[in-house]
Image (cartoon, rainbow, N blue to C red; front, side):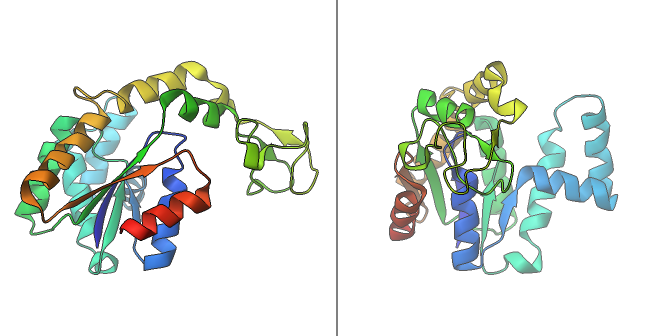
Length: 224
């Protein structure tokens, strides 16, 4: 089962990807991790990517896509994979589709988590980290995990925020790219949605991102 995952920052996409990874023993492949791995190992593609990154430039698709394909061809992906974080625009979607077909890799399922932009932003800005355990869920904008005042709802420990979670301009910039239906990330998702409607072999799944993690997982599992 080869899966491509879409969802805005704040939608719980990473959480659901981790759940799919554990439940189906499927590698959860994130584009950022692929860059770090290639650069860390000193591969030829990693060295080329590092040149762009060090200059503060975007890594060209001609480097990114071969890295992704190389990762998808590794032994742990032979029974399936979940790709997250790429493509980010329609042009990348077209190039990825062509590259997968050329490599003989079928894309079985595309998952899109639906979440209103304002709700997604609030979820990011509402995250609070427990000083005792960062895995204790606390969010001032989600009733089910709302902290007890300024204390952790799980253990009563003090709470703190991450600086990047409170950078509204940065959040808006990332979301502007994601929610762009003309040439942004949603445009790339809709490219595959159109393909699924035309071809029939690929399945396009949408999930309501508003409910709890457990409820979103239940919907995801029922549709896979």
